[in-house]
Amino acid sequence: MDILRAEHIRKNFGSQHVLTDLNFSVSKHSIFGLIGKNGSGKTTTMKMILGLIKPTSGSIYVCGEKVAYGDTPTNRHIGYLPDVPEFYGYMTAREYLKLCGEITGVRRSEIHKRTDELLCLVGLNGVNRKIHSYSRGMKQRLGIAQALLNEPELLICDEVTSALDPVGRKEILDLLSAAGKRATVIFSTHILSDVERICDQIGVLNNGQLELQGPLNEIKQDYRQEALQIETLTPDQAPVLAAHLKALPFISKAEVSGRTVNVQLNHYEENSLDIIRLLASESIPILKYERLEPTLENVFMDVIR
Amino acid sequence: MTQISDLLPLLIPIIVLELILVITALIHIFRHKTYRFGNRVLWVVLVLCFQLIGPVVYFIFGRGDD
Amino acid sequence: MSGFTAFFKKEIVEYLRSYKALILLCVFIIFGMMSPLLAKMMPDILSHQAINGITLNIPKPTFYDSFGQFFKNLSQMGMAVLLLIFGGVLSQDLSKGTLIMLLAKGLSRHAVILAKFAAALILWTASYAFAVMIQWGYTLYLFDKLPVPHLFFSLFCLWLFGIFILTILLMSSTLVGGAYSGLFLTTAALGALIVCQFIPGTDRFSPLALASDNAGLMTGAANLHHAVTAVWITVILIVSALAVSLVVFKKKSI
Image (tube, rainbow over all chains, first blue to last red; front, side, top):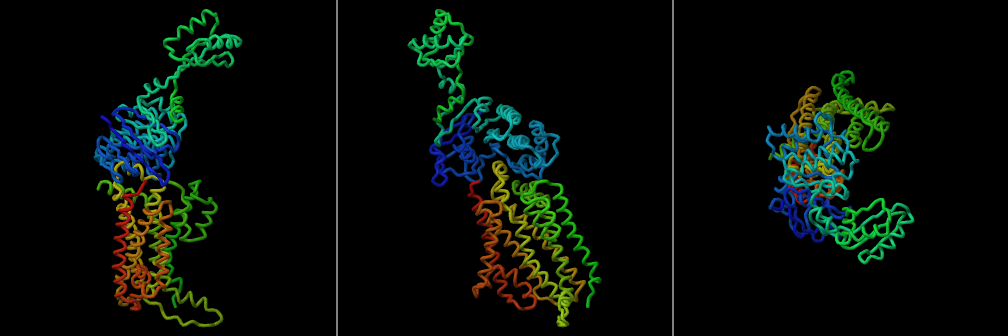
């Protein structure tokens, strides 16, 4: 069953059309990466799921319930973590979580236990300072604790790693992939390596709609470039090899740079043996023979082009 | 004609309250390095020179985030 | 309801830890102590200024003068302090983005407005009550008690005017964005009311009468009937401003 479904979402800010026709759904127990350039409407989309911003038209369903603008009861299923979470600096983490717990209606006896568990989980137990003295990474971790407090079925994370250093990023990504075992996670970002690290489903937001959606590994397969990289032993052998390769009918391109030949070809599976035979018959010694893996970056650049 | 000295016992609580405000403000100023705007010297001068108004303005506009 | 209680507690903690409660209480208590003293010392102060041998004939200050001084201080400086303390009542929470996560947690928007109003109302009422009690005590000690007509009504008027300011601040912050724009809009609204006072015949309906006629009501210089009209108008304005805040905030993009 789909935990989240967006149907024909349109959003204009004045004359600016941020989203033109956004349709997507997220199935339960996936980690969904929402990718897009800055300003492509990622934050707007997330705020609409939370009922904080009103879509110009279209509707969103969370766990089958329609999201109502303003106070939406669907938020009880959701945990939300913004890019830069803002807290009341004069509170301690414990006080803040207590406030959140009271708002969501967690039972009084539960709040204390949940708070302890979560502070342990995010590594803030034993920190009794006021929040205003926290680093960005600590605030982000408290943000995760806050988002997980009501044991949400859907965890919405907006650009949560963008403002962090590599250590902070790793901590947050680890926490999110752990959270992904129990909840569905929607994770928006423009950092593609983060998506490759934790997401299993992706959607690429471009021109106001989701231009590509599906399981990450399938998408990578579909966008697989048929490309090879062959490194010869000495630089003078590279042009020779390139000339021989170009003569083969299935090779579309063979470019030399130094002693490396970059090859583009069709139907690698059927033709790979011919290349090996060529290398053997011409007795060109090679250092490296590699089929290039498609990266998410290639896919992304391809889609938004 | 009333003498100011007769009223002194009644004046003391006012002075005490004003001192509380000034001292709280000064302690806060010296414990913090950053202010929403202005610098330490400005706020110390303001708080000391303008009784009542100085501390009020500091806590409303000058106090940094905490 | 749980959202209201939790957010109300948060508001109170915020007023305490941001020193706002301390300032408001101290300032109002100081006004309560200072006004009778100022009234008492006024002849001495004035006679010191009378140089060149001109003797000013100043009547001996009375019970009325003490309260006159109190109303003057509170309706001017007191209201200014009230504006400053509660100027960021909703704007700060909105402009900093601290409300987003709580709203996403399911905090109802009506609860936000009502809790903010309740907390501000309690803080204002407490400070005002302290000021009045101390003013009463000091005045009784320093002056002979005189029968004062409508004193409690006058005090009530100023209290109501304070609530009027609070609700206008709250409404302004729902209407415009920015950390201090609610404060600016309210100041502009009060400015407009002051300008309106110059239009003959309108002053009796203006909420400003609640903060300007207090002393006059005691001495009989102001018309009690007019003041009652102003009270009802102000009550209607307070309720409408609250209603507008609730409706606008419910529909606000955050």
